[in-house]
Amino acid sequence: MNDASNENADRQRFADRDDRITRLTQLSRAFTYAGSLTEILQHAAEQTADLLDADKAILMLADEEGLLRVHASFGVPDDIVTRFRASFDESLANRLQGLFGTAEGFLGVPLVVRGEVIGLLAVMRRPGAEISSEDEWLLSALADQMAAPLENAQLAAKVQRAALLVENARLYEAEREARREAEAARAEAERQRMEAEAANRAKSEFIANMSHELRTPLNAIAGYVELLEMGLRGGVTDAQREDLRRIGQNQRVLLRLINDVLNFAKLEAGHVEFDLSNVPVDESLAAMEALVMPQLLARSLHYEYTPVDPRLTVHADREKLEQIVLNLLANAVKYTAAGGNIYLSATEAGAWVSIHVRDTGRGIAAEKLERIFAPFVRIDTGYSRATEGTGLGLAISRDLARAMGGDLTVESVVGSGSTFTLRLPKGRS
Ligand code: ADP
Image (cartoon, rainbow, N blue to C red; front, side, top):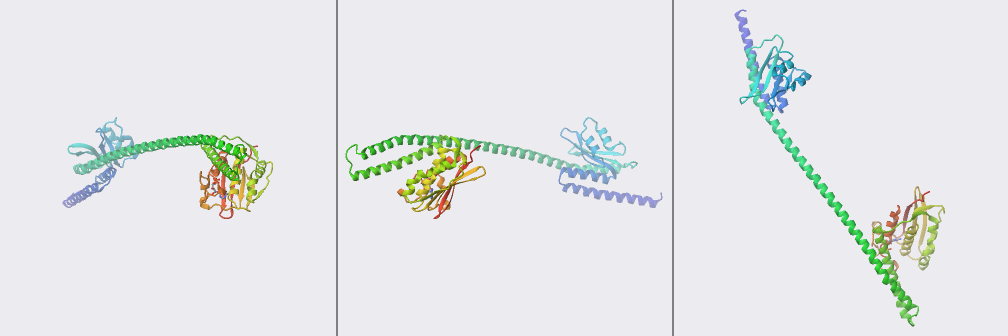
């Protein structure tokens, strides 16, 4: 080799060296900007292989027990990394040999931080490529540059893991607390529901008992009024007779009121029994006219019943069915001015039979339609004799209808009239 070529070779070596040092500096900067530990490690393995012209590179870090584990690699197939990553029973030399496939051309340096070995950086040169002292120097320089950012990243990862654990524990505790609170709220709601139910039952039982106590003296009043009217206690003047009539009339109003309250309380307390059977609709409805005839005549109302197929039946308690229809007819009479019409009819659809009570009375305002079914609700403002009542009739009727599996609804137009519809299940075959 002549001088000139020696010089050239020297210049080339220096140029290579310069280039490597530049890349080394760049690499150290890249470490500072890399985000996660995995990113830093992978970057380090790749750059090491590149800088040292190596086929393969691996980076191992000591775990908590001081065992070296592969954390990043370059040029080593994944399955081999997996196989040698955690095979603790093999010595480090064996594992490196396994990872690289051979022990030749191997160069490795420890990663040291504050005098402590935290890992190992190793490369495998191409077959035949020599390992120079400069390569060793370069790898050591790389290892030195990597160690500090690696440790930082490792610490950061540890802190992150710890923070995650703390956050998990906090979430778990918060969830347990929320569950405890939900359970307590549910238990409290249940306690309140039971209390309310018990209070309601006690109230209904009290009303039922009171109503019974009130009826006895009222019956006595009626008896004595009759005695006096019949002249059994001596002669009665016309004025006295008029007073007795009023006493009798008020006694009947009071008795009806008490009966309504008693019936409603019984229904609420669940004390009403239903004797369900197939009830012939036509038979029950046809009998209604006779029951309302006196009121119809007194108010000059026109009444019309449209007969239905005599074979049509509903599955109901006959007495309760007739009680509901009678109540609807009585209301129609009460709330329809003299000369108006009242119609009774029934239709069937599917598994249901609907009984309609229609009047041409004053009707009910749309916003009040639902309220009239609530107990003690009366829409009337002026309390005249023509519209006596307790506001319980419809509440009782709807409760009865529902208890028999049906319902009671209303449609109405103010000034034109109302149609109440009692829906009941068809009779069973
Ligand atoms: P009561 O008739 O004893 O007041 P109800 O529960 O039977 O009680 O009826 C509640 C209210 O519904 C009545 O006060 C009345 O205002 C209204 N109402 C019921 N039936 C009719 C009807 N056919 N036409 C107009 N209003 C009615």
